[in-house]
Length: 208
Image (cartoon, rainbow, N blue to C red; front, side):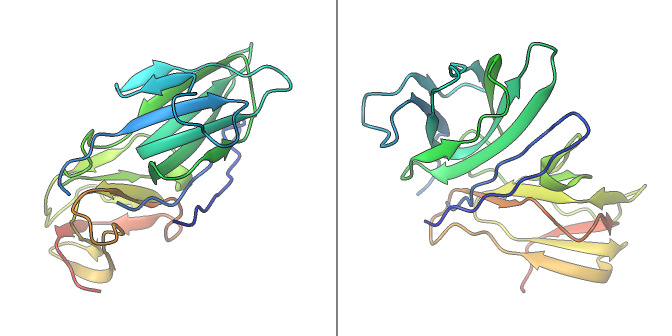
């Protein structure tokens, strides 16, 4: 799996790092943190996270941090003033990923999406790189009022989703297929989409 990274800086120095996620049936998400171990040596992890949210080890000034992730996770780094940087990582547990260090006062990990990566659900964000409050949908919606502007999104499982600019599945449309490489589980992510696409209907199940 080839990892891809994207960088976004907001007014509060919010930064996101994104790794391409591919994803039989029901594999729990987890995150392993390694401090100073660029090989992510088995059994040498500093933190093992499976719950929804957990504190991580904030690195020292000269320490490098690496992760192995199953699923989709947000790493939040804080400084002493409370400013924070959000970095996003995902994967299928087969890669040792280096983490950029923005702040090192406090770090937390938050699991995103279905814990087992199989639920029929899409989470839509108004900002790019998963910025903002997610709009969660678990099935087709012929009418979304008011329309939702979509700048990024992710979804779990072996499902496809059609996004429409008009009600009742009309107007401009884009179909997104799951990128799970033959599995029936996984998280498919799109950190940058269509310059705030005006979503007025959404259909589960589509063909590109």
